[in-house]
Structures are given as C-alpha cells and as structure tokens.
Image (cartoon, rainbow, N blue to C red; front, side, top):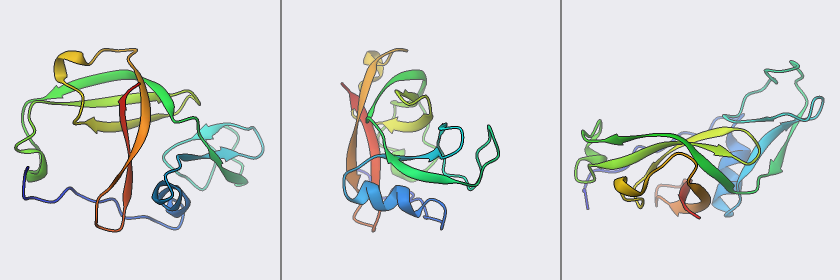
Length: 135
C-alpha cells in the first residue's frame, strides 16, 4: 500500500449532511421539495426549478457504471502503486451521477452498465467515503 494519504474532501455547510450520513453508513442525496428532482453534488438551489427548498433523502445505494476510464498514471502519490485502476462515472437509480476510483474492480472487469452498490470506507481522517463495488 502507498504511504501517501488519500486526499480527503472538506465538508461545507451545504454538503455537511451528506458526510454526516456517510459516517452513519447511509447514502443520502438532496431532493428538491418543489419539483422532487434529485441532485448531487449538494447545491443550495435546484438547477431545474431554482427552488431553495430541499431535504436530504436516503438513496437506494444502487446504480450502474455510466462511463469509465482506466488510469495508467497516478495524478497523486496515493494512487501511485494502484495503477492501473478504474475511475468510473456511476449513474445511481435516482438519476444522479457520482465519480469513484473503483480500486477493488479489476480493470478488465469494468464495463458500461455494470451494476454497482455503495459501501463505506472510513479514511481514519474524520471522513467516511461512499465507495462503489460490483453488485
């Protein structure tokens, strides 16, 4: 394993609920109270109807690989001993997309449409990351 530490996201007032839920082992997304649209990454305003009314709602934790690349060069020291690895854009059942370095998925196994499910990785740095694996 690399001795370099994984870069850790910094919660903001808008994203704090997402990270608090992840620490409990739950995947939540913002949902607009006006048009009922889902969104990720957390934003104060709905991009569809411009409402400022939203709530955190539990997500299914399921999706598929929408797109992917195989990284053959590390852009940060944390990934230096992990190449090649999959970087995937995942489309969740709720219609939003997330990006993940799917380090546990062998590059030759990656394919568009591959069903995935969420799991949670405690970084030991005060943040729990939602991660994705083959379902």
